[in-house]
Structures are given as structure tokens and as C-alpha cells.
Amino acid sequence: MATATAVSQLRNAVSALADLELSDVDGASGPGLHAELSRLAGRVQAVAARVLARVEADGRWQAGTSRTFEQWVAQREGGSVGAARREVGLGQALDGSLPRTAEAVAGGSMPFEHAQILASYGMSSDARRAALGSDDPEVNEAQLVRQAHRMGADRFRKVVQRWAHTVDAASAEAEHTAACEREHLTLTRRSDGVALTGFLTLEHGEALRIALDAVGGVPAADDPRTAEQRRAVALADAARLVLDRGLAGAGRAVRPHLSVVVSYESLQRQIGAAALHDGRTGADLDWLPDAWHTADRRADEPAELDDGTPIPPSVLARLACDSEISRIVFGPGDEVLNLGRSQRTYSGAQRRAVLARDRSCQFPGCGAPPGLGEVHHVDWWARDDGETDVARGILVCWHHHDLVHRRQLRITRDHRRWRFWRPDGTEVPDTAHLDHSAPPTETDRAERCLDLAERRLDLAEPCLDLAESA
Image 1 (cartoon, rainbow, N blue to C red):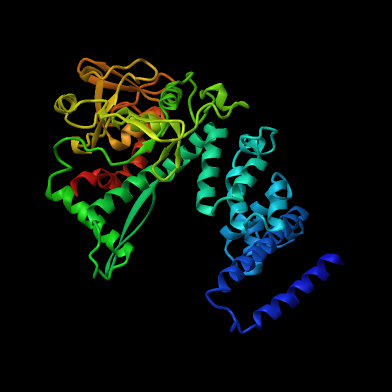
Image 2 (image 1 turned 60 degrees about the vertical axis):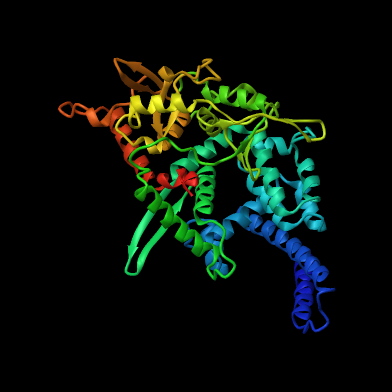
């Protein structure tokens, strides 16, 4: 059998290689040797992944007691279920939707890690798989494989992330919504301290990182602590700043120092798209522009954080709602031709007026202090030509500002009271003033469950606005 013979020869070659003393390897010959061994190992790993995919397709593994194929692999080989899931997914992609990637990895011209990255993002939606197999030279698999030859894994990951957002913005929004729903922060008291576990979305994690770096500062030359140890102390210092300086009780709202880069045209179109809704409810994202679901997937390139990570339009809309916007004009060679002054959509005086009127977050049942708040445009300026007017600005906390944009909530003012409306026309109830003498409706019960789940996230939020306080 050809496969068995090839594996036997490989086994003998690997045994001979492992028996070498490597006494002749030094700083001159070692780098090239390591690179060649890594390429060979990647080619073998790709074959192993394809083997796993075929074993799963055969189905004989189901005769055992394992509930899933990944569990069967982990129990048989002593690995983890997560690693088995990634390997099986890669094998399926190489045997199916990624023929050019399979050819490049098998030939040694594409690193194994690059293939993993492409399979991870490329197989994540039908639209992305369709783009990979299309004839469009700007978005298909051949174009990505060519780029993989010219860059390292970290840069290639950003390229593929940007590609994934560009060809399927609807899935990017759904993925961001799922990530928001997974956010949590758990503090568990131990006998010698407190253990922290949790998960943040990319923009929340970046804001927290920037705040901790600002609070922690530059370590002294003789500081023996690791970066992780300094970051832990910075988190505790950030909490002290909130408490000692009264930042949680009063004062101006503070913007996290989070930078987003986007063209002016994309800014207008993406915020406009995030503000549109055709009245449907739930997780249905069909309200997004038709261009995002058709072959013209390059209509708008995504906005990006400073490190090149793309963000969905709903996040861009919320950040742009009350942020500083700087104009930078580039020439044809990417040289900076003009740098405009930073402008805030609401001036300092306007912000103070909104805070003085509202006093706390106006989202039903919240009441977070103004120190944790932002001013939201009731009339989204990309959809409704909303003006930066005090009468049309409302104070909401950072968390509920994000929620208003993600859930497409509409806000009206009636007799000095702000009212929040869902896309289906029903009102978000004020849980602090519900009539508990009447049995709650199904909508009320669902809303209360959502409120309770969302408030569990609020413990992490004070840390996000502290970069200014360092």
C-alpha cells in the first residue's frame, strides 16, 4: 500500500533525524535548518489533517462511545477536543473548498499556520466560501494564497480578517453580536486573593489594554516584575482612581482613548447602513444593504482599530456617535497632505448641558452616574440628518449606548421623559417603575432576563474610561 510505505519511510527518516546530536548546528546554520524543518512539519500536519477529515467521513468511529468525532480523536490520541476540532476543520477545508491552499501547503510554499488562518475565517460563512471559489481576482482564494507567500502569520491574519469583513459584513455583524453576548467578568474569592476570568469583545479588550497601559506607565529599569504582574497592579490602581477621585459619582463623561481609522465615504455609508431597519425583529440581519449580500462585496472596506483589526458597522456607529473625529487627507502615495483639528460631535458646553439635564443614564432601569456615560444622538446623523443639538442628545452609559446601536432602538422624548422603542414598535419597559400588580407579559419577562444578564457585565465597564486619569 503506497500510503503505508510512505509513512514507514517517513518514520525511518524522522528516527534518524531525532538521533542526531546536532553538534554541527550553530547560529549560522541553525536558522535555515529550523525553517526547513518547520516547512516539512507543516506539510506533514496538513496531510494528517486531511486524514482525520476522511476518517470522520467514513463514520466507523461512531461505533464507539464518544458523542462527537472530536471527542473520539482526543480520547484516542490524548489531545484536546479543541485541537481536534481545529484539525478536522482544516482537513475538511483542504479536501474541499481550499484546493489552492492544499496545493501550496503540500508543496511547501505556504506555511501551515497560514493555512489554518485561511481555513478558520474562510469557512465561517456561505458568503465567504462563495467568495473563495469565485472568479473575482480581488477576493478569491488565489489572491489570498498569493498574499500568504509575502507576509508573516500575524500580518496575514489581519489581511484575512479584513477580507472576511469586506466580503460578508452581515456575518461580521452576527459574529460581533455573538461575542457581545459572551462577554463576562467573574471575580472568584480564593484563600489568598481573587481570581479573574472573563471574555471581552475586541474593542472592549483594546480599550481596557490602553487604560491599563496608561495607568501602569513605563516600568523602571530595575523593575523585576513581568508584564502580566504590572498589568494586574494597574487594574487595581485603575479601580482606586475611580473610587478616590469620585469618577463613578460625578463629573464629565470620559472617552476611552480608542482610535478607529476609516475613510469618510465608508464612515457615512456604514453608519447609515447600521441605522437602517425594515421593521423585522430578532437576529435577522436582512436589513443590511443589498450590496453586502451580493457579489459587490467590496462596496465598503471596514473601519479598523489602530492595529488593523476590522470592526462591524454597528460598533463604528456607536463610537462615531460621540467621539473626537480628526480629518487626515492622504495623497496618491499615502503621504499626509493635511491634518485637520480634532472635533467632538458634541462640544464641552453641550455635553455639560446634557449631563446637567439627564443626571444619569436614561436607559430604562439603569441610572448609571454621568461619569460612566456618553451623549447619544437621538437622531442618527447618517440616517436622519441628526443635528448636534442638546435637545436631541441623551445621556446613556457606555454599555447601553452600545446596546442602543446593536439592537436598533429608537428614542423619543415625551413630557420630560425619554422612551426607548424596539424595531417591532414595542416599548422597552422601565423595570424600576413596572406595575407589578399586573402579570408581566412575555416581552416583559424576556426584557428582564436580558437586563439581568447585561448588568453582570457592568463590573468591567468603569475600567474602560480611565486612560485620561493616568
